[in-house]
Every structure is written in C-alpha cells, then in structure tokens.
Image (cartoon, rainbow, N blue to C red; front, side, top):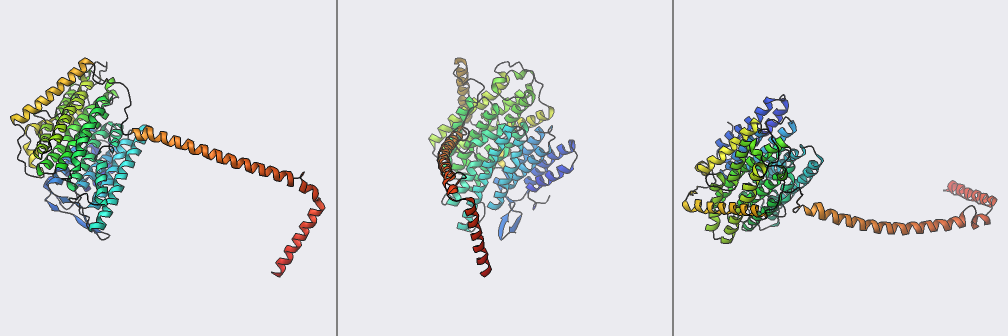
Length: 565
C-alpha cells in the first residue's frame, strides 16, 4: 500500500466515486470499506514525513506520522466505520458525501505536519460537517447550522491569522510545540479552544449536535472536538492554563445536564465534561498525562458514539429524545437498552469498562504532579458524570416510567453498530494493554490495583446512593418540557434585546430629526408658494407680458455670448 498517499485522499476519492455509483447497497459498502482500508493504511504507515510539497514557496508536510497522530488516525477511521454502519439506511448522497469529506478532513488534519495544511483541513471539517445539520431539513436546523458555520469558520480565520503572525515571527510553518509568548500563538490557542469548546466558547456544541440528523449527531460527536484535543496536545502540551480551563470544563456541564430534558443535549453537555479531563491531561503535559489524554479520547469516541447511537435509535423509533416523553422502552427495545447501559458504565468509568482504564491515567498523573485540588475536583466531576450520563440517560429513556410507547427494536444495522462499539468498550476495559501499546509514550500503569478499584467503586456507589436519595425525596430536577439557555442566552435573548432597544432608540432619533426637517421644508415651500405662486405677490407685480419680454432678452444675450465665444 502506497505510504506516500495521505490517508485523507482515500476518503476524498471515495466521496467522488460514491456519486458515480447507483443508489443502493453499493454506496453503503463503499462507506464501510473505505474506513477499514484507511485504518489498515494508517496502521502500516512508517513514522516520518511521508508526503511533502512546495506551494508558493512554502514547504508543506501533508503526512507527518508519529505515535500521537497514529492513535488519533486509527480511532477516527474506526469512528467513521461505526458511524457509517449506523447510517446504513440513509440514502441521501449529501449526507453520505459529507460524512466522507468530514472524516477525511479530520484525518488529514491529524497528519498535517505544517500549519497551512492544518488550516485547510480545519476549515474542511467545518464546511463538510454543517451539511449533517442542514440535512435535517427544518428551519431551526438551517439557522443552527448557520450559527455553527459562523463559529467554525471564525475559528479557522483566527487560526490563519495566528499562523501568519507566527510565520512572520519565526519563519517556520511547522506544526510543533508552541508557547503562549506572542499574539500569533495566542490566536492559534484561541482557535483550538473554540473547536474544543472551552468555557464561554462552548455553546455551539450543545446548540448544533442535537440539531443534526439522528445519524449526523453520531458522526459529529467523533471528530471536531477530538481534533481540537489532538491539536492542543500537539501544540500546547504542558501549558498550565489548560489545567484550570479543563477543570472548569469538567464541572459546569454537570449542572446544565441535570436539568436538561433533551437527552441528546444531555449527551452534548457530558461530551463537554469529558473533554475537560483530556484538556487537564494536556495541561499537565507529562508523558503519562498525554497518554491519558490520547487513550481517553480513543475510549470517549467509542462510548460517546454508543450513547448517541442508543438515544438516536430510540429517536428513530419514537420520534423524540425528550426524557419527559420517554420511559419503559426496555420492554420492546431490550438490546438497545443493554447497549445504552454499557455506554453508561463506560463513561462512568466502572471497572471492566473502557473509561476506567483511561481516565485513571489522567487522575493519577494529576495527583502525582502535585495538583491535589484539581484532582479532587476531577473526582467530583467523575461522580457528576455518573449522575447525568451513567444514570439519567438509561434511566429516563428505558426505565423511569411507562410512557405507553411500544416501539420496535432498533434496525439490524443499528444494533450491529452498537454491538461492535459495546464490545470494544468492554474489551478495552478488560484488556487495556493493546490500547496502551499504541499510545504516544511507553505505558507502565496497572489500573486494576486494589486501591484503584475500591476507590472508584466507592465513588460510584455513593453517587448512585445520592441519585437514589434525590429521586426518592423529590429533590432531583424534574424532567419537564422546557428550553434551557446556557451562554446562548447572550445571542438568543440579550443580544436581540439590546439590538432591539438600540434600534428603537435610533428610530426615535431618526423620526424626530426627519420630522423636524420635514416641517421646516414644508414651511419654506409654503412661504415660497405664497410669494411666487400663481396667486402670490411676485406674480401680481410681474404681468405675463413682462415675463415674456425678459425671457426674450435673456435668450438674446445667451445667443450673442454663444456666437462670440
């Protein structure tokens, strides 16, 4: 297999070929085959810069392979396969092509060795992914997609400006470790932060992911934010401010997720929460912390996709993802319920599930690097994850109360997609060594020590107890039909109010000024009419014959001047 061909090109070629194929199983098979071929390609790539070129005097590295890029490339290929299998029933070529271009752009960015190539793929992920939102076909989805596109393209514009400044300062475009010592690096950092959903920059995630199609949300959950995690790990490992940004990211989504009724929005908030653990690991910056970030990103893509798929399958059968409208579905969707529980156990970091063997790397390294308060807050956030994702999602979807719905089990291809993902979540949890073996640095870590297992079980059991007490006492936030605003209050409520107030003020001033001017002009015209009109004083003093005489005199003077000029 040619190693000089960037892996992303396989997806781009498939997107072109797909349009030439007739609708039906041929397209579906192509969508499944390409990610598998790409994964094999990534696995066999030797380390180093494999595809370089020069454009306009700039040296570009299109395929820089090392252990960090390889692990992200592999999980992106796997996520593309699972997402396309889940979407087997989708016959819309727009969604199919968008999925291929989106995955290809994300993989291309992972292997980008220079900042220009990174920027091109960075914008490619934004443009391709928005079609998965617009494909839902509603007016709300259109407006959500526009907001998403503005933010994602804005991130790319900031990235490009930062790249230009860094190139002017250093003369290099290599995508490597940076420090926050200049305006250029700060702009690149901000660009990565927008895509990673940093606090106050995050609400595009909760706004857009639940607005996408059922299958589009699964695909969206895998790439954009994890690409940003990769970029931060590549460019800003060891930047201490990331520790504090990350811990805030783990905490604030807990409270919004608890009161949210839309289960896909709950999962979007929990996605933000899990990103926080990865960002903390990048901020700590040691080899083991970066291993924790990479492994947790790997595991997170799988269990988050599993949760989105289970809720998506329910939505596919019932038409809703509102907790207040669901419940009791385990009776007719038992397999989906089991897969959802596996995803919930994985995200909650139960022993023998994937989250346990990856999150522990970050928590242990945070404590080892003498951040006891950060460690304590991460432990608290871990308990919160169990509440809003480990319990709330499966409980209110399948068990809480009998909604009266009796939908059929999820389609076979969806069950296969969920089954494969669930198997991987369990396999990684029981046998973490194969995952540890492909991480960026050598791993000497044993998650299944007595201390680790007992401490985690204590945390989880007490969190379960707290949830039970809150439910029994009625203190748990009820699941009611409502729209909860986060930082989007600034542009959904505050900004329209301020703009409306300003518009009314400007309109008032304009009306007052134009009214005054109109009155002055009307008065002036009236005065002129009275003096120069047909009944005015000037008309009475100048008879018609005199006016004709003067016009003749002026015409004669004009002719004389024209003749001698």
